[in-house]
Image (cartoon, rainbow, N blue to C red):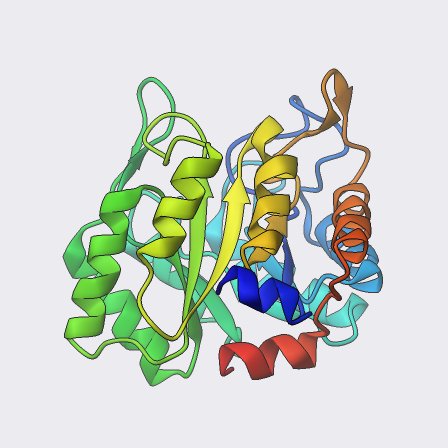
Length: 277
C-alpha cells in the first residue's frame, strides 16, 4: 500500500467489472448484458490476467435485476478456470435487492459493500443506511465472504473506521476507492494520494476511476502500490471518440501497462492469499 510496495515488485490484482446496472447497449452495443455474454467476456479477461470479476445481473431487456445474479455466477463458473467471483450488493433501491449478491449457491468469495449513499444522475440517489451496511457486513463475515469496501467519497472512509471500531471487519481491509463526477471523489492525482494516505494499517486498495480518468488514475494506483479495476461498467471508451470493443480490450491495455511498470499481475490464487480469502 505504498510506493515501496511498487518498488518491491509486489503483484497487482486486476479486477474486471464487465457490466453494471445503469448504461446498456444503447450506450455501447459491445456491453455484455445476459449471463452468457458476461461469462464469455470474463473468461477472455481471465486469460489476459484478471484475477477478480465484479458482477451485476440484468433482466432479458438489459435492466438491472439482482434476482438473476445466480445465473450470472453459474455461467462464469462454467466458462472460467479459477477467477474470484465478487458479487455486487450495491446499486440497488432496497435491502432485499442488495442482499441477493451474498445469497447465491455457493456463496461468492467476495462482495462489494457500499459505505454510504451517492447520487446517480439528476433524479436518482442510491440510498444506503448504516443499518443496512451493518447487516450486510455481519452476514458477509458470518459466511466468510470478503467485503470490498466501496468508498465513493472521503466521508465513506469514516464509515469504514466505524466498522473497524465495532470489530465488524477482518484484516486485511480491502478498499475500492472510487473517483469521478457527482458525489464521487473528484478525480485528481492529489485526491488519490490524500485518500490513500488516510487508509488504516493493514489495508489493500483498489482504484476505480470513471470514464476518461480510468487510464491515468489506475496507472497511478500501480505506482502507489495499489491494485486496479477496469471494465465497461466504469468506462465505455478505449480513447476519446472510440468506443471500447470489449472488456478484454481494457484488461489487455492495463496488463501491458503493469508489465511496462515492471510489475506482474496476480493470479487468482495469489489474490486470495494477499486478501486473506
